[in-house]
Amino acid sequence: MKTVKFGGSSLADAKRIKKVCDIILSDPDRRIVVVSAPGKGENAPCKVTDMLIETASAALDFGATKARILMDKVAARYYDIACDLGIPETGERIKTDLYALLDRDKADRKNFTDRVKAAGEDTCAKLVAAYINSLGHKAVYANPGEFGMLLSDEFGNATVLGKSFALLKKNLSKIDGIAIFPGFFGRTEKGEIATFPRGGSDTTGAILAAAVNADVYENFTDVDYVYSVNPKLVKNPKPIKVVTYREMRELSYAGFNVYQEEALLPIYRAGIPVNIRSVNNPLCPGTHIVARREDGDTGTRISGIASNSGFTSLFVAKYLMNREIGFGRRLLSILEDEGISYEHTPTGIDDVTVILRDSFLTNGALDRIIERIKAELLPDGINVVRDLSLIVVVGEGMKHGIGIAAAATSALSKAGISISMISQGSSEVSMIFAVKSSYADDGVRALYEVFFEGN
Ligand code: ASP
Image (cartoon, rainbow, N blue to C red):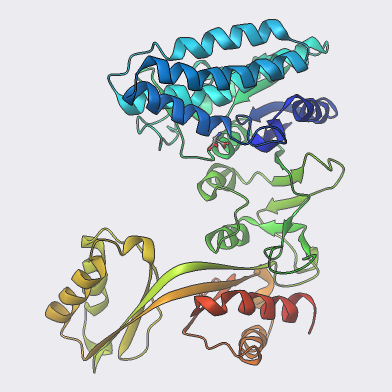
C-alpha cells in the first residue's frame, strides 16, 4: 500500500487537480492520499494558505468587513475550481463553511488563526474526494481530528503525539475506498485545531505512511528528480536516483529545499522509503530516499553538493587549552545561556572554532558571548569571521574512497577559493567546507565538475 502526498502547486486549479486524480486512480495501491492547499498557479498568484493567514489577521485586527472581502477571494477560488470540476454543489457547501469560520471564537488569536489556516487543506481534501466520487470511484474525506491525528497544543508549531499512530492505523484501516486526508493540521487533546509549521503537509504524509507501515511514501511535486546540485548553478545537473535518509538530511541542512527536514523523522524511524516524483511526468521514476544504498546506485560515491550562507565562525585560542578540563563545556554553556545552538566545532590543540548561524546572533548576542568568553575563559585570542557559507559534499560512498578530500580541496584551490574551515565527521557521510560567501557558488561549481563531470 502506498501513501501519497500532493503539494499545493499540483492542486492550484481544476486542470491540475484532474491530473492529480488521474495519478491517484492509475495505481490501486495509492490508497491514502494527503493533499496540501491550492498553491500558486497559472491564474492564481497566491497560495491559499497565505490568503487565509491574511484573512485571519484581518478578522482579528480589522473586523468583519475587511475579513469578509478577503474570504470572498478564497471562497471564489474554491468555487471556481469546484465548478470547473463539475461539482458546483460541493462549491456551494465549501463557501458556506468558509464564511462560517469568520464567526468562530477569536479570544485566542493563535487558535483562531490555526483554524482558519487549516481550512486550506481541509477544503481541498473535501473537493478532491467529491471529484473522485463524481467519477464513479470510492473516495472518503478523512477528517484529521476524527481519524486520530492528535497534536501538541503549540498552535502553528504543533508536533504529533505518540498515541496518534495507533489511532490513525485503526481508523484508516476501516475506510472502504481511497482516503483523502488533508495535510498540515490535526487536533489537540482539547479538541482544538492546530497546525504544523509551514510546509507541514509533508509531515502529515510521513506520519500516515509510518502509521500504516506503507510500502512507500510517494511525494509528488513538480520536478522529475531531486538534482545533485542546485540547477540554478549548473546546467542540466545529474539527477539523484537513490539517496539515503542520512544523505538527504545533510543535503537539506545545506540548502536543498526539497523536503521539510523534520518531516522525514517518522518514516526514517519506520524505515519506509520515500519516492519524490513529478505530477507532470508521472512515468519518471523520480528520486528514492532509502535507508541504505549501494555506491553503484548513483554511479558515484558522492550524491550531491549543496551550500548554505549565513554563518559566522568564532575562533578561540589559549595556550595549553588541550589540558584545561572543561574548557569546551564552559564555552558551549555560554552559547547555551544565549539560547544558541552551534553548528560545528573543529578544534586544534590550543584552539577551538565554533561555527554559528547568523540568525542566532541578533540583538547583540555575539558581543555578549565574546565578553563572557574573555571574562570567564581568559583566552589568548578571539577572532570572528562573518559572512561565511558552508559547502557540503554528501555521499555515503565517501568512506570507501581514498582521495576524496584531496580532490575537493584541490578543486577549490584551482578555483582560487580559500577554505576557512574543513570538517568531516567520523560517519563520513559528508565533508564540509566553510568559505567566504562570495565564493560559495564558484566553489559548488568547481566541486560539481570534479565529482560529477570527472574534470
Ligand atoms: N499549505 C501549507 C503551507 O503553505 C502546508 C503545506 O503546503 O505543506 O505551508
